[in-house]
Length: 391
Image 1 (cartoon, rainbow, N blue to C red):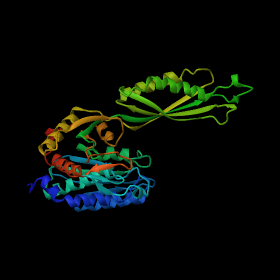
Image 2: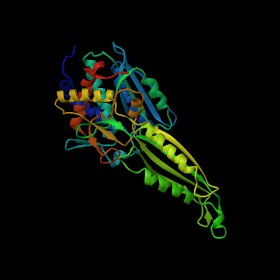
Image 3: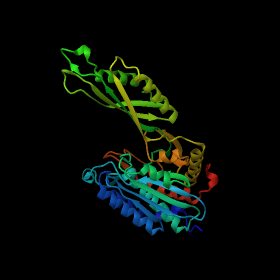
Image 4: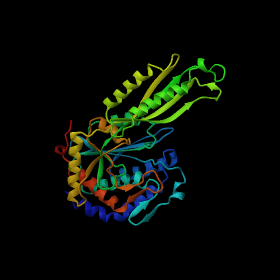
């Protein structure tokens, strides 16, 4: 039996919410700050252990820890709360950007992205614990290397393993203003083109040389002309170009690295086919081009299940007087995409709202800390499988 509403509970806990948020923001936990990330993991672990969660902490040599906390429920399946403990900020950022409150906004490194979302999780779970709610299980996954894309951890394998049996995912990443919830994200990939030519003296043997930089430039221009429409299913942006050792030598090697954003695997496969066709026919003989790619994040695609979950969450928001939620599509990758790709109904950017993530102007709206915590609590409290299209 629920003794009081989530709204009554959270507003009674208002000072504790703010104090916990301040405590976490004051822990410097940039992706490279392994000491700070350990502090973050320990601080959150204490809270979740106190609520009866069973914890697993995965530690890595070059990455912050990943915390997985689970509490069983009476019925099959569990709600998965997803987030990250790392920020983009270097150690000492608090000196340049101290924790402070101004005009209903709270500033500080990671105040929005995403210390606010972690506080949201903790206090939503405190309410559910006080209400003796245990209809479904709850699993919390907080990684320590989201901002760097998990190069030094096994996060991808861990996600797939820990997601088995999840009913839905609320990713409490930094929320947007105007009640916008992320339903779609473009996939993120890297494409590398390595061109090999033939070195020659630029003055005496220019004609016999094969300029790898020039050949790579032709490929860059072709790709740029075809794949830079932001409204299309795929964009390719050249970011790094390397080649040449001296001005009087025809360069025999060059490399270009592209940022690829794509809306579906089909559009990405079509792009790779184009690259293969284009590189197999060089401008002149004696050129060889090797293309390789790596998908950092799969696309997050809107599905009937995720749309239905958003409608449900929007109803809970309106019930509390917070307004209707709107789905949106963005170009940036996030860990939510891995769970969406597994077919699990997923909502992203469900955390407290603010602006200017990754900058010293980053802030979270104080009132949104409370509102989004209430919303998350009610979404879990009133959840039923009929709200989703499971399977």
